[in-house]
Length: 613
Image (cartoon, rainbow, N blue to C red; front, side):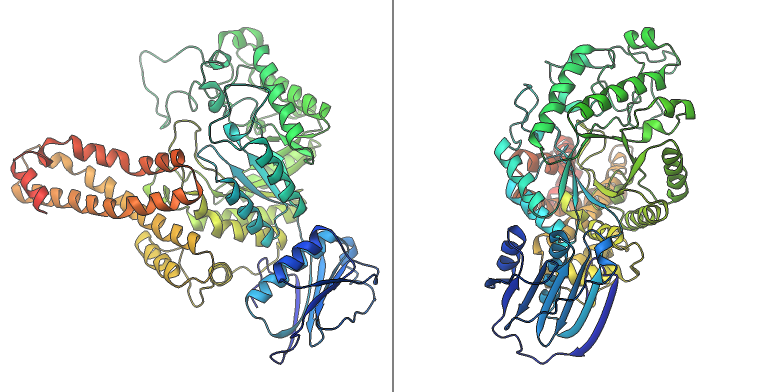
């Protein structure tokens, strides 16, 4: 038996005879979506039975059920359930329909594995919020794919989606922002309903200070930016920061002294509230606004030491507005990390702080920050990451650093259990700096750490030492394979290629892993090859030139194999423009460089060798 998340309590009995329950039906005292869902998933007839004092489903060829009490633990645990399998059939019972739904997910996994043993499972979640982050800076999955993603999330018992649509949100009351491939309002409404039916709450995220490139890049709103002059040091006219002299760029932040900016922000937030009517929260961002006090108006208004003051005023203003919409405001925590006790006393206590830390070794830092926020009177949600910026190394441009991702998620599971957080959300970033940065590793590379986070947030005490093996069995139906994602890139490709060839489920994601791991190898080869091209110009020997040319040709051959496969994978669930952008981000400059080098097309020795190789 391989259930993810691993249940709290499991007892196994004898092996059951084959062929029992040949005429199974669903007997139940519930109605509505959960019953419709169970009947559809199991393809069984449902027969109502008005009995028992708690919601139940019995799957058997005859109806019989004991009307005793649930285990003591379950009435205290929202989402808890009990599942029993014996010769008489299967019983799933719970305190609520939500718990019953989670029990159904467990049973569906058992069915998939053809489990034929007597079982009794008593299970419940450790975290009230078990979240997934859908962010669309680079592209947005097609509408039908988003529904499939929701189905996959509920299979592993997630109950929250932090939805950051940016210009893919169907704004109707503000113009010039919504992109051509955005969701329409009916699609968004259906996504919200579809998720809510499956006990998943969507928390919309509307940035209100930084990370607003998708707004400020438009001429209509460019004047609302904070960075309106270039104050570079003429004696040192470049920055040591790899992303440039500014934090991100000049279109990253609103000017918090501009009332027109607030009129726009409030319209956008009001529309968020209207289009997510069932959502308790609205996340207003407020992270990484490091260019505050850049404009002359803000410097005059707040003074050189007014950084915290300007951020406090903005955050409190947004919190008050969100509260007036009958929603709870949520903000990222990074701008608060240097706040004093006095600063925290001035911060609106309705705010929920979402503390994000994404790397190996952040446990102690996280514990200190959470205690600081809690002592200041704030509720806290944690944020780990299944896919984020792994630095400048080419190793992780196309596949997440799986080892660090799992360590980070496990640390957050521990922090939530020890410090009694509201829960944890696993972020999935599509790119780093917003508008001009290339896409991160492709979306579907994140399923391994995402499913791991589902286990850790549901069952913080689970023994997950064998999780990779269990994931490969549960998610792909591939048995007997281990140490796939912790290997070097070449070994990862070999193993993911084997998974793609032998998987029984989720073949598309298996192919994503295969080709994205190969793309990682390609990217490393590309960086190595181009740093040697100077040898073709500096008087190096003929043999050295031969080697450099052959390496470029091998790279071209690899690109010709990879590019159509990558295009096909991305294009299955993304539109043409998004597919083109991702493919260009990986291959365009390589192609451009080769086409631009005259010795590969002329009649020189190198040109002749390149064409012959």
